[in-house]
Image 1 (spheres, helix red, strand yellow):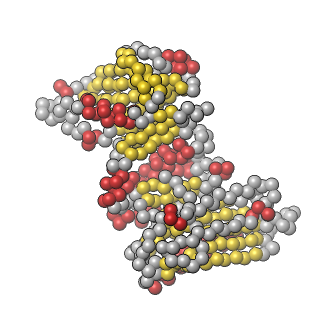
Image 2 (cartoon, rainbow, N blue to C red):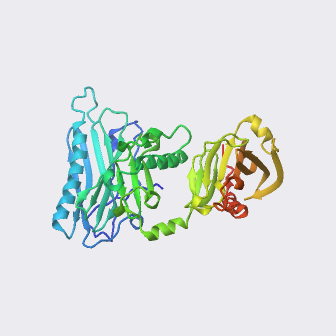
Length: 434
């Protein structure tokens, strides 16, 4: 989902990009401060830029050196076929640059006493083009700011999206539909992604809470939306800045009609498989892109610690007595659970052993009737590296006799089980868990 930025420098045609690297000289001003610079530029052929009719740009560099600070930066000046729109876009870019520069100058260290003369403030910035054609200009600024006297510098982003058709600068509210809970959706996707990227305790979930200010730095690419997060926003300073790229297909129920993904992108996405990776417990599996992913919070059989579930879409069993079909993963490190992990439990039936990707799993079956419902589970358990892994194929159905005659049919157990089993067969444990 995330991707590093692409930079741009020098006068260029958009279809022939030369990527430049802005050398940051801050280390000479920051002795023993462990300064961090993590600007890794994308190769030109990987940059999300579309050739458009008469949509070009030139690089503008600025440089300023005083006794208080060093300031260097780059920004684009666009060349469009529509001169009026060109001027508006360039004014918007220049206003963004002025904001960056003025905020920095306001925070310089003129009033700080007892500073070493060579310890001065520093601002360095460059930009990446996320989209450039005759309909949409989208870019982000990577900014490094150091104020003399501080323990270290700070990396952050500013973004700009300009719709050339509407002739306006876009905000989050221009892209997302007001009648949807889009902030909650972004928060869910952010939690899902970053909780998998960092070890427990490193992810700062407050940085992706459903508040507008958490999501204002975004850039529209041809097929996705990238959200940019400054140092500290979603992780400790040592982890650097972060990016979250979300396919427009995944947001199609939340974004405005003019920013919808193409029908081709939707069709391709529905036929692709997604991969779930768990960093903490070192496992992964794949599942169809249109299946329903969620953090599972209900009772999880023996392990009592569900991590994730993947649900078969309801439309694949509509008109039947099936309520849900889930592939669920749970784990436990509790010693009392490890001792009995591969043993038959009360109300379970031992089915035998099954080898999945080189590992031998013990298989059990459990059927639990409850108030006209049946929770039918096939359970796979093993112990690996002092972890009890438990995989459940859960079929929750209603008693067919409780429905009005002719309103529903009995679900096809073999067909639905095969759908869940196809996910199970991709489950792999790397063996590197510590």
